[in-house]
Amino acid sequence: MRQPTRWLATALAVVVGLALATTTRDAAVADSPYQRGPDPTPASVAATRGPFATTQATVPAGNGFNGGYVYYPTDTSQGTWGAVAIVPGYSALFANEEAWMGPWLASFGFVVIGIETNSRTDGADARATQLLAALDYLTRTSPIRDRVDANRLGVMGHSAGGAGTLLAALRRPTLKTTVGLAPGTPGNNLNMSTTQVPTMLLSGQNDGTVTPSYVQGIYNTLPTGVEHAWAELAGNDHLSFTRSNPTEMRLLIPWLKTFLDNDTRYTQFLCPLGNSTGVSRYNATCPLVPPDGPTTPPTSAPPTSAPPTTSAPTTPPPSGAACTATYRTVNSWSGGFQGEVTVTAGTAAINGWTVTWNLSNGQSISQAWNGTLSTSGSTATVRNVSYNGSLAPGGTTTFGFLGSGTPANASPTCASP
Image (cartoon, rainbow, N blue to C red; front, side):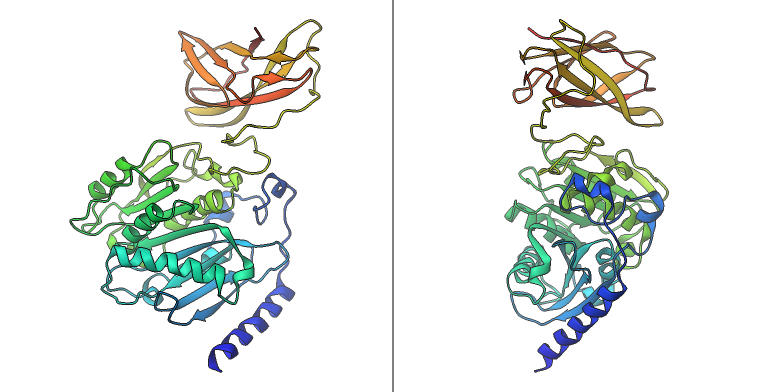
């Protein structure tokens, strides 16, 4: 009878939390059905609590792991939430070393399950098995299973637990993300070349156990076709991740928002790194696009599937022109910028298009999406890809790119065969 009593108390806490919750969804949430909360700011990402009231409950032993704790938002008005399972390192307890993360992450709109391992000396393989068992419990039989989106799950862990998260991603490629905190076990060089899961690695500059060179070795095996990032925290040692760490969370929250919630409002904090305070090294496969993408791709990051075309352009093209192209700067930072070009068909349908413009002020382009890029001298050329070359009369499509240098008002021209 003791366990039902605990969950009854939790249910009462949920009712109280609902009465206190005042958060409303911002209009920008329409970009993705999974976005939760108002538009983020540098201050909100760095805050120790997010916009959601939370509660927690104890998880009993069994179900493939040794119990633990679950933390979740009390708000039931916004649908289900993405979830992340966290496992501690070798010989450690979640309750002693990672429990500080639970309420923090839950307040930003995640369900968090922190687990204790069956044995404190379990290796990385066993920790991977128990992480996946915890996610299965959370989504299938737990009392809050109706609050969790079983299609938006991630794993995270420290040290041997961090190695376990990477192994869990290799075993379950349907995970949305994996995060390794100083991940590794001595003598076990992890090879992630076959992973399909977006991966973040966080390590300490002064970690003598899982050294920066060790983490770099893991990072170098991550495939180019999978989004990944690595941040080295200045002055941090191996145990820095086992106590409240604002720098870690300032990086982790945008990452989880991007890949569990498809919330590309948060990529601005990672691409480029918005706040480098406390970060001694940073690498990322910018612009960091969630594999599933939002339902309606926002302009701040490229989609990974064919963007929709519209039947009517904002500005009609000149009479007789096969197509036109208009440019705008989406975002800019010191030494770089993100640009977007809209291609509009003329009064007749087109099957294929080519856009050219001149690069000025020493500009160069490092990456493009929704188009095939080539450059010759100061001339940039982008041709359609397979899914966006055919446009109905007046139809539009867009492509984007990352550039270095200072943004300028480009004047692209469009031609169609």
